[in-house]
Length: 333
Ligand code: UDP
Ligand code: MG
Image 1 (tube, helix red, strand yellow):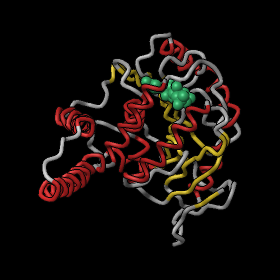
Image 2: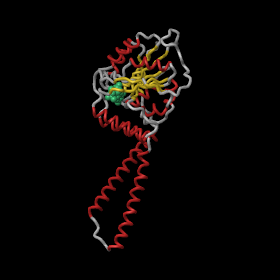
Image 3: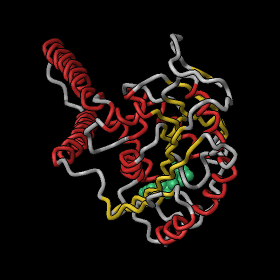
Image 4: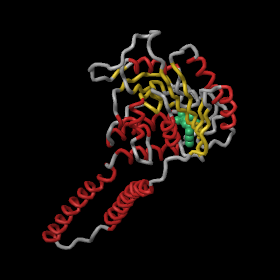
């Protein structure tokens, strides 16, 4: 276990496993998009983990992100038997980031943990997270030390992404840390004050800061069903992260332009001097062609990058809500 902590006094200390400590309301936020195969297994596992801990009161906020496979019906059935379940039914599929935002807005717990329904985020770890929270940390993030469950391509691209992102963006993202983390109420309230509608949650989690501890865990494969994130979706997710937290791709063109202009100027002087000294030379067709097409390509990339930011700024100015709720299902007991 690796704890990053500045070392001043911890405000909230209760004796380990003491009967005297106050019960705590824990909100689990579970985004669901076509998870009919996993929800039952997920709930069973929660029972295994939390039934022996009466000092943890559970609220399970399922955010149904436009599922089309009967996930909602299954949830409603389970809710009849289980009063801890609350269901936020979104009007369509808004994506995981929006679903998480909806869950954070609805959660009432003193501590909040977003986790996936496919059991890739082990609920057992939450008990360790709570111990660290009781010791005074406001955020306890989980870091995947073993990504064997991911394909080689996904591992390599994730690695490249973190490296590039942390090179150009600020604040830095902790490597291999996903959305699975424990957050104190104060952190959740801070997240709720962020008005932006294009939400890259991992970046926002890092941006809010707070006293943070890190727990390592091995990421297991999905219990059932298939991942909802294909290569194209991940690529766009990465672009979202980079453009949300860095303007370096916009600024680099100033320097690149300056460099190219400077080199052209020097080359111009060289040509003038050569003509003065040796007379008119036959100009090189090949070098001209290469220079024109290369610079044309570079300019198009520059315009593309501008477009990425302009498009995002355009969407942000519309101030549309991040998600829409069709109905909130909760039992009043
Ligand atoms: N998810 C969602 N909306 C989406 C895509 C995914 O709410 O548009 C949920 C999904 O149901 C799961 C979690 O996000 O609970 C993580 O998805 P997945 O396991 O497919 O992602 P991976 O683990 O492969 O990154
Ligand atoms: Mg998964």
